[in-house]
Amino acid sequence: MLPLEKLEKIAQPLRGRLERLGSTVTSHVWRLGFASRFLFYMVMHSGTALRRFRLTIAEVYFAGVLSLIIILVSGLFVGMVLALQGYETLQRFGASESLGVLVALSLVRELGPVVAGLLFASRAGSAITAEIGLMKATEQLSAMEMMAVDPVARVVAPRFWGGVISMPLLAALFSAMGIFGGYLVGVQLIGVDAGAFWSQMQAAVDLRNDIMNGVIKSAVFGVAVTWIAVFEGYDAPPTAEGVSRATTRTVVTSSLAILALDFVLTALMFTGGNAQ
Amino acid sequence: MNRSAIDLWVGVFVVAGIAALLFLALKVGNLATFSSGQSYQVFAKFANIGGLKARAPIKSAGVVVGRVASIRFDNESYEAIVEMNLDAGYQFPRDTTAKILTSGILGEQYVGLEAGGDGVMLKSGDRLRLTQSAVVLENLISQFLFSKASEAKESSREPAKDPAKDPAK
Image 1 (tube, rainbow over the protein chains, first blue to last red):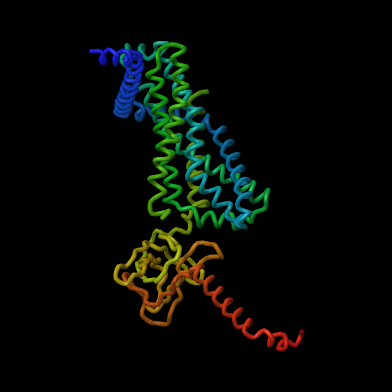
Image 2 (image 1 turned 90 degrees about the vertical axis):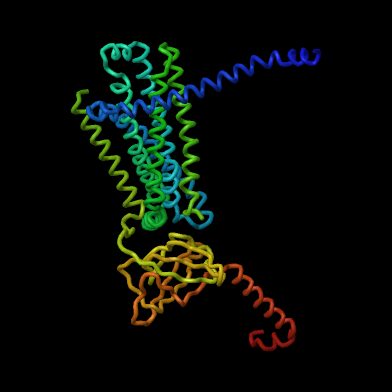
């Protein structure tokens, strides 16, 4: 009896912690399950978003067109920095002509989809969450339900598809702008030979292995970011604090999701036959 | 902002995005030089392929005429079998020589084809008989060191003769 009592004494403070741990894990798994069901429901009820395509186009405007400036400017600067840093390293090995390869491959494969995805998450994802969360807090979503309008089909699905359409285009624009920035710094400023810059780039960048994989990556990130954004907005507690927390969570979760997914996708795409 | 203005901007955005994709495909990637047309397969055995990789270019007279499809190891002859996809637009005689060459000093390796004089052309599934392996840098260096060492041995054997032989000294 005595050892058991002793054990209980030791276990008593641990119990509360264990319970909290268990409930945290359970609630996360519960949310994940709800999010998956939500995604499925949303995709199944996308008919309105596709039939009344103007709803989706308006969301492409908010998620894509309004993110253009930040994407283009960041792409330009990322490309220029890549060219400066890459030149410093490459010229040590007398390989400064490979600057185009370095800039293009790092942008098309990694930086384009990832940085554009991170910017998209903080620029458009947070706005989507805040908008849907606020609509929920001000009971606009409930009002729609009262009028027999499905808020998921009318409000959520167009935002989802708008984001999914915008993201690959934004990533492509980011990469193209970055390569232009690399050209500006590498060829115009530093004086790398323009012919070598472009021809080595063309010889090294493969359409299917590099560009298509980059596009696939950005499409995956687009789905992940907008899914997280619309779900966090829909699931937000209908208070001012709840909406603000949901917005923060959107940015944090989708940034982590982008980086984790990027590792998985890179491992799948670029460690196969190409890298031998 | 009314609807039509939004439509215009979305249109501009989509056009710009597709233009960026086209720019990546045409100017950055190798779509322009990438021939999706017909090709035929030939094989070649090499004693050593060095750093040759799948998708490496196959060049003849400096022009890319195909790509390496796959590289296997032959268990019987202990040689590498390189499968090459050649563009159907380029025909080569049956006694063509395949060499593994390097572009530049530290550049990537590629397969160089030198046409022979046979009247019969290669067809799909043929094997190139005449091959030359990649140059392995370590072998070159060891050969160089060996020849240096034997030179040094010879000169140390006859030390008195050398200055007398040289008219300048």
